[in-house]
Image (tube, rainbow, N blue to C red; front, side, top):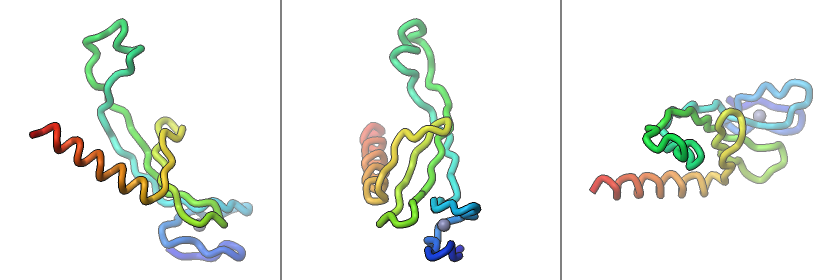
Length: 104
Ligand SMILES: [Zn+2]
């Protein structure tokens, strides 16, 4: 979707309505259900605690005027990571390689 916002044109991935002068471009968020290890604090009193499901939200965003987009990884609305697109690709690749190594 491409639409004009004042003097700025949205990137192709932007779905923001840009109401009331909002200048933040953002894409559709992706909800990703993952299983995470309980924190050391959680395991302190319950060492048998199994992996617990959480939902991460992944979203591309870019403030008007910024040179490039960012990929945010959010948990419960707070950014866990906010990466350049190249770093996001490197992270994805490294995670895939690490996970593959553990299955050998
Ligand atoms: Zn936009």
